[in-house]
Amino acid sequence: MPETVPGTTQSTVAADWELDPSDAGACEQTARTLCTGGPDQVDSPQWVARARDAWEDLPLLLRREVRRFRRHSGPHGTLVIGGLPTDQPALPATPAIPGSVQRQATVPAAVLTMVACGLGDPLAYRAEKSGALVQDVVPVPGQETFHGNAGSVALSFHTENGFHPHPPDYVIFLCLRADHDRIAGMRVAGIREALPLLTPANRQALFAPEFITTPPPSFGPGTAASAPPATPRPVLSGAVEDPDIRMAQLVTTPLTPRATAALTAFGSACEATARTLHLTPGDLVIIDNRVTVHGRTAFRPRYDGADRWLQRTYAVADLRRSRDHRPDDDHILIR
Image (cartoon, rainbow, N blue to C red; front, top):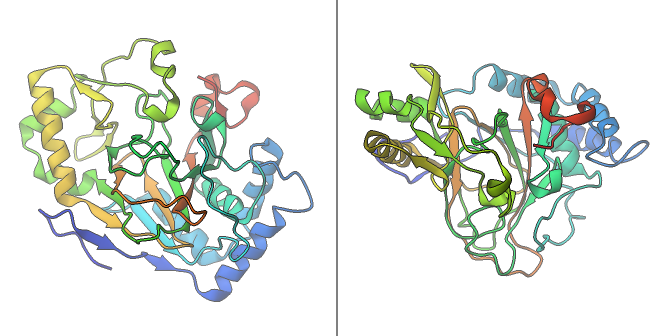
């Protein structure tokens, strides 16, 4: 697997690990059992419970790799597994409407939910994509410049939902279709590689509560206005030698001159250590959202039903931490 070369942003990465055909077939068979013979609404607690049980029926090597990643996400904070089932050739046209989500059980939705259960528990936010557990990441006509999952311009580095008291621990993507020109790339950069490039002064500033992060555009224009005033937070927290990140270049504002300088330096360190993932159908990407930022390169959609199509879900290692935000103990955070 190609390694990152410090000082370049052009490192292109293939899958860390590929399922063999027999394991891929076993995954598809297990996923199809979740689409029949019981509740088939992805957001229902009953279906998630079935997915949790079905996780144990997935091939041992897949479960082992995911569990190893959960214990320690490695130097990159990213795991790419190829060869997952995507329901080809029966896959429908790529959605092209705002807010597209997956409510009905499908093979890709089942794969995502089972892996989320292997990492902990799936999670969604009511204000984002109407609270759906499995969300489409697709280009939408008229939203080309939207800085979020419906756009096709470059997307800057961010951790998911760092403004929220309960951000996801993991972001999971499954590629159903690549873009026509095969130029769209998911960009990832981990703190374990970026940290050595920061000066002691910049590290100290990033650990100070001198930054404000507001909701991203994907949460809708009224979310920030209706939310409580943002509390200053650090960008880095936890162990000084292996910190967590909460940052989104678009919506994180430094409050002091030293914070401004440190945030710029952190962005440069991420650029210098970034890797680009050019995904193909069946590639599953797990991002440790605690230690890794991600973004996207620009691409050109055609809106012909065959555009780039990823599906996404979130997972948390400890669902109970957010119990006060989840009425009836389901998987959707309402605030």
